[in-house]
Image (tube, rainbow, N blue to C red; front, side, top):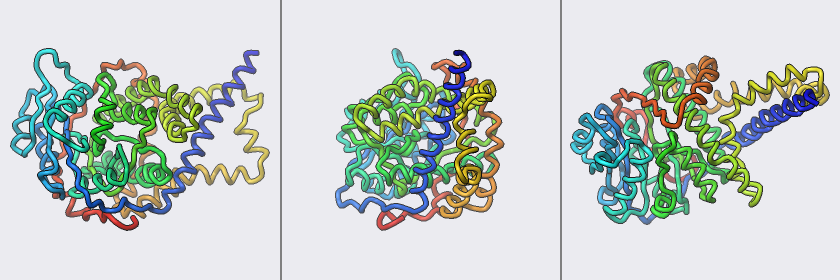
Length: 422
């Protein structure tokens, strides 16, 4: 009886890993060609731009400067910096760059990005009438065409939109590896989901919600990954998150192993917490309503367990090696399966990244750096274990040190074409 249970669990683990991998592989095929941008809108909406910051005097001025340079009527958007218990010159620097300061500190106010965002969103609604709210990070930069692209998406009917994220710093090797990963993810993950009607993933910066969505779905005060929690909550409530390729936002990537580990452990802890909160609800909605977006959201959320399932599955496979194993049976009995398995391995590991990086005109150093990603794979086990052991009160702040300005990037990245095919 015990061996039968082990065999069943082993095959279930294989089915999960194999089927989820095939799902995202087939999904990615849509990234082989580009889609169509939303038509340029005649109506101009009014935006509130919120930028939370905790002791970010070194980078917040550059972030605000990029927002002040947006190619959008200045009277139609306001820039708010949410200073969350800052003890440095963040507020002074942000105000000098032209931002309105919302000071989230004082008696009764606990520090935390989720709390600061929830409080600031309510304050913004008291400040004035806005059609939509956009969220950024203190280390992010917005391309001049960002708001115009977001306005086009909202006028096309979107209620929640994520912009295309790229790296702003690519000087160090680790940053190059991560920057190349963004390019591949945009082309073979975000773009296919947009074109096939699924929900995009939120990244914390470059997000835009209509005022109605922002009021109805306030930020969670307790989670570690506010963007992921909001993403799953919106999907559970039937709100689709669109993706706009032309709404460019640049993020700072870790340049040291310490920065990378701190951020990745926090994300892992947050992903586990989000899966615990939303995975059952997403799957229930998918089954009850036949909601493909909820199904994909649940599958995406379940990927946080993928490494654990793979490790457990390998152990179970060894213990049940004399019993029936699905993948082994398929490999041995289906004609051409050996070559098919090799091809399925090469597509996501080699061919797809090469296609994406070449199609997106990535520089040769980024192309070369991408194929060093397996070196980061050795960190998955310690990162996952650390993520499991850390409590929900663990924040693990990442120090931001990149001094890149939007003018440094726009010189190398032309303004996006907001109409026509991409």
